Image (cartoon, rainbow, N blue to C red; front, side, top):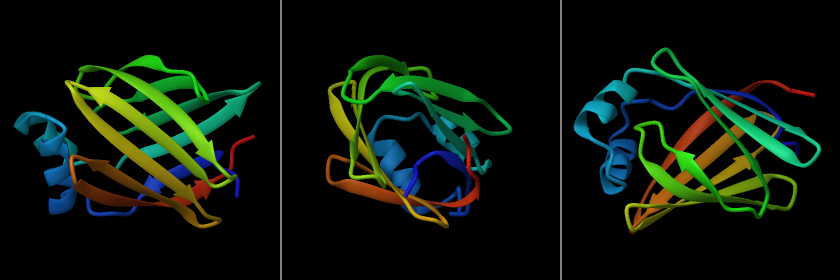
Length: 138
């Protein structure tokens, strides 16, 4: 299954599991409250081995570009710095590992014809966000 495409969040953005995960990774109260009010879209594209992941919402748009297996510096949505690396497992899983403020966070995005399930985990806490596929990108 191709990971390339556009996805809209269908999970409740105010989910208690998600809020607990965000607390665990150190996201401030103000940023968690703001994030609970939006349903972001995710766009993933690839060209020449370089991927771009865009997160689009009413509050803020973010874009990161990366090559699989190569660590890079990332600025999170709440403006903190971290080290990030992406890997791919098979054709349908994209795995992101972030080192942030001494904590390790992992996001496993699994893609299907209908959408994407993203499982976020850190320090024994996890949350799942579900997305509906709304388009393919070339």
